[in-house]
Image 1 (cartoon, rainbow over the protein chains, first blue to last red):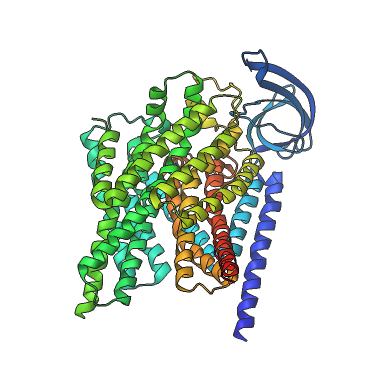
Image 2 (image 1 turned 135 degrees about the vertical axis):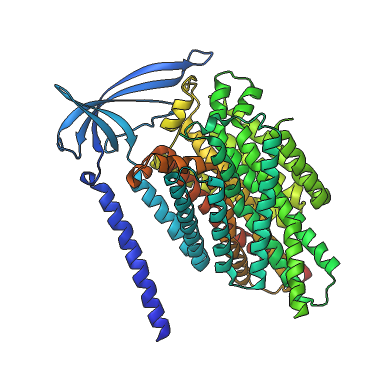
Length: 370
Length: 259
């Protein structure tokens, strides 16, 4: 009976999720629900080509296409009217992508003698929903319960951080770093407790993660202060309307949480496992095993965060180099912040190894005394 | 002294003290990775070269260096390497498909404003460049997951060599899936750390949800997070199957020699 019931609940959950996705998808297709004006491209009328760049042989390698589109307004008071629109894209597509008939875009409308419109942004929400559904489905099919858990923890972390940022924006005098520290404690405790319950092992992992992050932040902030942030270029954070410093340091903390937690859990579980299987093991041997595990994961962990950070700099780095900026200048303008992030996380990862060993040894000892 | 050189020195000292020889090796691998990225970008400036192909070649080098230099050359790393390559080929297709579908190639309005003094039109395809960025941001995690699945499978096989291919595959899947949440978390938090400025801006400007789900600058980040999550997921069954296949096939050929 119980199995049947569980299966029923599962199918109900699956059905309602599917229904939710389908309904959201359909709603996103209804243009009148959006405040901003939306047009759908109907037909290409005219294309003017301009060669922007040629190679040594004189062949065009980058061409600009000025397209005149017939478009239909899908919402606002002018719904149903058609108008002519201009749209530009090039082979290199650094900004606008090639659009085809049937694509929907957000536009600004200008009401003069004629109604004119200018493209602001392509409509992407339905495609984002498809991608998220695929992600969710794959996590569920391959990862089963653990996959579902990964998706939920992702949503949970996003919610916590959104809450912290929301509070920061509404209370301008609070420190973002302090808020993110509170968020970090919440996320670490919630993640680790939900994985393996409230045990000594979990407690040891929580303390290792938080201590590792704290020491990492102290070292990084100290270096940032003592060197006066020499060589750091905050230009890439220019999109911020506030001082980039505070946001950058808070980002250093957030960026390292996952990696540091991973190290703490891996070392902690191994040492607790060893202790359980060999209760008489000497502390010295336990430390040696912990060190061994730490050395094994150190390299790959630093590689993971390194690539997660550095790859994002490629597009702007490329633009600098294409515009004949020197390699040194391009690197210093684009690499500096991401390198600090990668190095700081690396310091966190490596430092968490002895810290986790220390806590694991302490906590396995506590059990012995009792 | 610049901030970066001081931090690099601290990391170097910590890695060599705590990690010993292996720590030094890991630090040099990091230097190799920096140079691979720089060389890859330098080659991308040639409009005749496809950024995706360059990135795939770079991924082969990165994965090879990470696996063989850090973990040593043996059957485990060999299997993990092949599994990583197979997964990357599938992943590249998936990534490029969604970059095209969501139209997130190239720079966002915000970035274009920042870079307004530069010219963009050199024939380098920036839609492909965004695909490259997503591939590279997940290659480290995919490689790590591959060795984390293959390695315990070989150990398990050593202790109980009579397992069937299906049993081996299942235990490999179990190991990988147990690691899934932590691997995904490592990546996700690193991305959140980089995107924090963007998130703050989002609240500052009071964007509406429909604006977030449509703005290129946000959708690029969402696409990166979701696709790299799929990367660390896809590598698990590929590695588990490949390892199980190799272990059991070897067994069959061994017995045939004995007979």
